[in-house]
Structure formats: C-alpha cells, structure tokens
Length: 200
View (tube, rainbow, N blue to C red):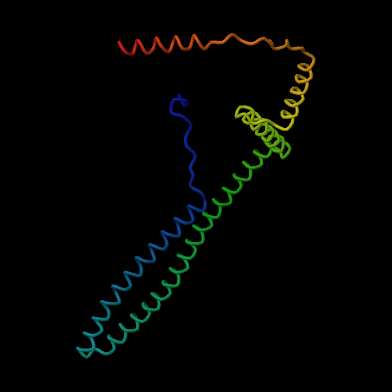
C-alpha cells in the first residue's frame, strides 16, 4: 500500500531556514511594537498640550516623562531591529555560500569521475589517432583529386623508364618504299560530278 503512494518526501527545511524564519518573526513583532509606541507618543503629545493649556503642570510633566521613556524604548528597538536585520542577512548569505560550496563539491566529484574515465594517456592516444586519421584522409583526398606524392612521382618515372627500355628491343617493320598511285584523275572526276549536280 505504501508503494502506491510513493515514499514520503524529505523536508528540505534546514536549521538555518528555521533560524531565519524565527528572526523575521521577531523583527515583525518589534516593528508592530514600534508602531504601537509611535501611536501612543502622538496621543500623549496631544494630551500633554491639552494639560498645559488647562494649567495642569504636574500631570503634563508626568506625561512628558512617560513620553520621554517611550522615545528611549523606541530608540532601543531601532538598535534591536538593526541587529535582527543584520543577522537575517548574514544567515541568508551563509545559506547561499553553502549552496555554492555544495555546487563546487559536486563539480569536483564530476571532474574526478571524468578524469577516471579519461586519463591523460587516453587523451594523448585519441589525439594521436585523430591526427593519423586526418593525415590518411588528406592522402586519400590528394589521390582522388589527382595530386601525387613524391613517392608516386618516382614510381611513375621508374615504370616509364622500364617500359621505354622494353620498347627499344622491339623491331618495327620497315615503311614501304614504293610510291602510291596518283589520284589526280579521280579527284577531277568527283569535282565535275559535284558541279553537274549543283547545276540541276
């Protein structure tokens, strides 16, 4: 039955992710607290003005002291907020660094495997075979295009000299010495016939 639904996926949430989330939640709480203090400060400022106007000096001074204390709290929360933001940034950056390191590790392992598959000797052998293949193909191309190497030229000359030597030994029959019969009357006859046909 378990195979039907497959294996449960492992959670990819790391301890750093949890820490970043908690820090962001703390940051949000401090920001909410700051807004609450700022709202109270505005109210107390207005109330203090009213008390001064009404001549209630003691009450106004007490309210201004409370306001001053809250302003100091607000400044402290600014410092805390800044520290939280810095920690969040550092944690997020460390996560990026960890991923980069993991990527480098994976890349190095892949390179090692490739080096195991192809050693320097293998590469040298492949390059040598490739060079030989290129040279062989060049020779084939030269033969097909009619170009001959120096060795081929030497072989052709050697074969020619051998054949020339064989032909010197062969005796050719003498050319006939008697004169050929004259063909002039035949030529005149043909010329007359051509003239007659043209006239008709």
